[in-house]
Image (tube, rainbow, N blue to C red; front, side, top):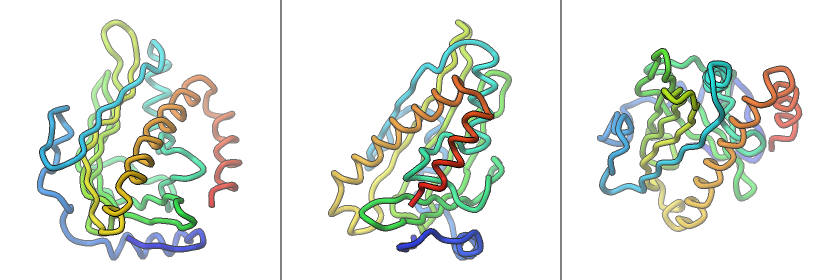
Length: 205
């Protein structure tokens, strides 16, 4: 984990990820494949219907591939658009309490099926928390398209434990904002959303 007052460069983020070596910081790797409870963690499962049909499914899957489900303005993935494949490390930047918090995670599995697409990433030691989160788009037989987030987590750093209620508040805010991002994405389409993203990126931090 790294703290900074100013927005880091891509070179800084690349160096941060290069230094984020070692195994995942929790033993229950892959547990988000099911919605079962993982003892010893905060367990969260949230989902929202994005609409109906093939076009909504395609648009939502494309948004996940481009990491557009991350709420712009206060959270983002650094250093470009990381490819979605197992083993890919990513840097997550979050603005909170006047600081930029940089954490490292790694994709632990992907789901690529005709009517299901998603992935899960888990925390590395260079992360403020410990756990795993799955992002999944599903096109059900009734033609509805759903976006779900499944996660288990607990604080890794002592100062996060001290600010536990605020940390949980930010986790819940992430879910709400991520739902809004996907809803807007499937409604407005690529060109308009990309323009909005550029404006939000300029406002980030």
